[in-house]
Image 1: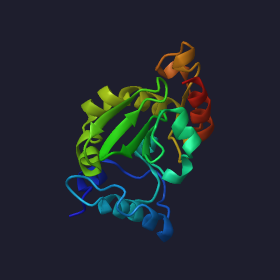
Image 2: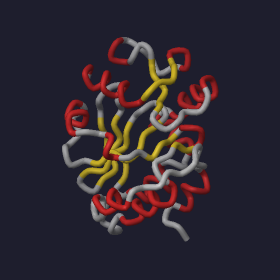
Image 3: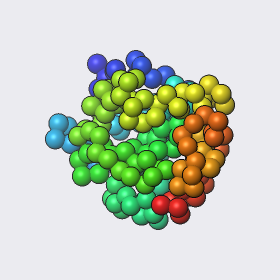
Image 4: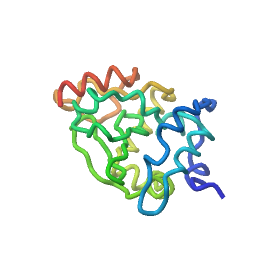
Length: 189
């Protein structure tokens, strides 16, 4: 049984898997260790599916190398934190001090949401009510339905952004590139 079996049963990769370079996997060996395991299951998941969007882009596994220390610092994320996933809205999940944390990119607020990644992916992410409540899943699904699937490197963009008076409603959404959008929001936080 794969450690992320429940996640993989409920979330389907929206694009073909990408092969992950062995040196990247080696670089992150031991990084995701928690109280319940050595974290190798995360690297196994990367090797199995790569960095891809799931369920038409509702959830993305990300290459942590995309997040440089300046971008993390702008959002108040520790330099040694590892961003590993995001929502369709571009909000980020990162691993730091043996916890999964959620960054709401619109408000800059972070919150601890799990003590290990298998629990996070197999329980928190697959529970629709929890995902909708905690991560604005219902609004994301509406945006995907209106604008089409969110590809790797993209996210739903709010116009105007919340710091400038916007709201998380489908009428304010468009699709665009994730990293430039994060950079703009980081300058507002």
